[in-house]
Image (cartoon, rainbow, N blue to C red; front, side):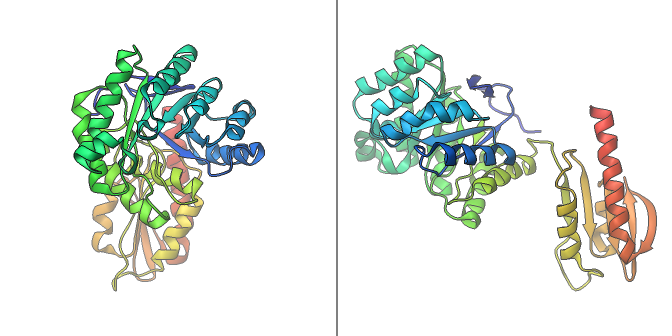
Amino acid sequence: MIKRYKTKKIYVGNVAIGGDAPISVQSMTFTKTSDVQATVEQIKQLHFAGANIVRVAVPDMLAANALPQIKEQSSLPIVADIHFNYKLALKAAQVVDCVRFNPGNIGEQNRIKEIIKACKDRNIPVRIGVNCGSLEEKFEDKYGQTAKGMVESAIYNIKFLEDLDFTDIKISLKASDVQRTVEAYRMLRPLNNYPFHLGVTEAGTQFHSTIKSSIALGSLLLDGIGDTLRVSMTGELEKEIEVGRAILKDAGLVKEGLNIISCPTCGRIEADLVSAVAEVEKATTHIKSPLDVSVMGCVVNAIGEAKSADVAIAYGKGSGLIIKKGQILAKLPTEKLLAKFLEEVEKEDQKYKDTHG
């Protein structure tokens, strides 16, 4: 059982972050925010993909002026992403549910003071977003682009906000590689109780981002670190959410949907296992019950895996077994196995729903 670090609970809109709240998954639109219709459409896509929070870029006043219309039509809480121009943060704070700013490029402390006052007036939180590639000059000069530099920047800015009597804070410490990202979060975690937003920045395409994020976020989550997360991909909105939720699920932090166990293909398999698993995935996307199902291509590991599975197939030569809770339910010809298996999975799904409401 993973024991999460106890953190302060804050709210981004109606979504709780930290404390005993579930770990939320978020993404960011890549439309021009000034294009209200396109941005709202992407927010809808993210909502249906299972996102809890959405971030939008606010690079200019056109984008800032579009926020009221976007907020009015958004089904998700909105975080405004601010760089360089603090006046954009002041404008955004009048509308959005959270302001994310990078201390490394906002500039003078008086500007940050104004941002905090604007957020305080509306009782919305801020995210201190420290990026390894854009540290304040004094920290980069002393520590370079290192985990230590990110942590020192975060400590400095947390203290500055606390001195302004502002503690509705979440923190991110992002680098574009796994090691510095993990090192920074681990270094900072024991030093405060603010919620952490996890992510590897500029993680690349779907393949590379999935690998980097799974290693970094998975490592931190298993340490009990993390309250909300984003898997950053180049142009893959729904996939960001899918991978983020899969990381939470496979780390044991979310009990939702099927855990499909299938063996690696080898010379012993007695069926078209690749097609069978693909069909199972496609036919069960609607199932949210946390069931373990096993699709095994031969008997070598099948019986052992089936003991802990809710429903299992063990393919053999020309026929195979359907196994439920470790007990053989039926022996059928190969061509009838999959239909029976899916029928039994549906029964287990209904049983779970009846039991758990």
